[in-house]
Every structure is written in C-alpha cells, then in structure tokens.
Amino acid sequence: MSVYRSAQGKQVDMAALAAKNERVRAVGNMSVNARGDTIDGHGRVIKSVTEKVSGGYAQTVGNRSANATKQPQRPLVPDKVKPVQPKPVEELVLTPEELELEESIDDIEIEKIKAKETGKK
Image 1 (cartoon, helix red, strand yellow):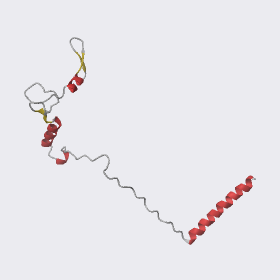
Image 2: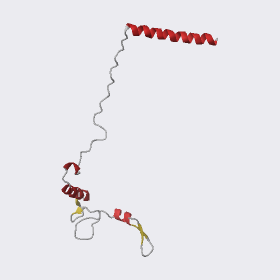
Image 3: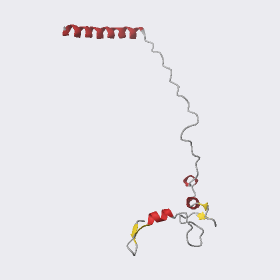
Image 4: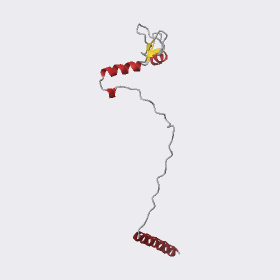
C-alpha cells in the first residue's frame, strides 16, 4: 500500500489507515476484524489470524517438525548464576637437565647485557 490521491486532491495513506483500524469489525458476514482475526459479538478476539494460518499450514504439511509450535520462552537472565571456578594451575617440575639449561641461558643473557654496558661506556 502507498499514498493515494483522492478525487478532491487530498493524499490518503492507506497503510496508516489500515494500521489505525485493524481492530475494528470488518464489513460483511464473516465475524472478523480488519486484520483477519475471528471475533465475537463484542469485538473480542476468539482466534487470531496467525493461529488460523498455522492451522491451515499444519493441515497441508504432514511433517510435524515443519509445523509451528509454541516454545516456552527462556528467561534472558538465568535465575542462578554459577560462579566460574578457576582451573588449578599445575606446578611445573623441571628435570635436572632442564634446570642446568635454564641456568646457562640466564648466564648467557647476563653476559650479553654486561657486554652492551661495557661497550657503551
């Protein structure tokens, strides 16, 4: 729907007009509102248009997984938030050979630093 121009030159927005009056009883003998919901004599919705469409689709399609079903909504925030437990850190145990290698690397790094210091002065 879009904006139409009347015979008198006024612009009429049909989408806004339909949205404004979608809960009003439609003219005819079907007992529906302008939206398509089945209503009673007082204008209360008995069966919504989405329920009608889902029912018709369920009759057409034999596959149960394809049919629309209402799923219980999960809360956005869980009731009980479990604190995250940190994983225990395993202690690193070095073999004697690894200890000796680590000490020699430290010594080499110290020697490099000393050589830079003496080279600057």
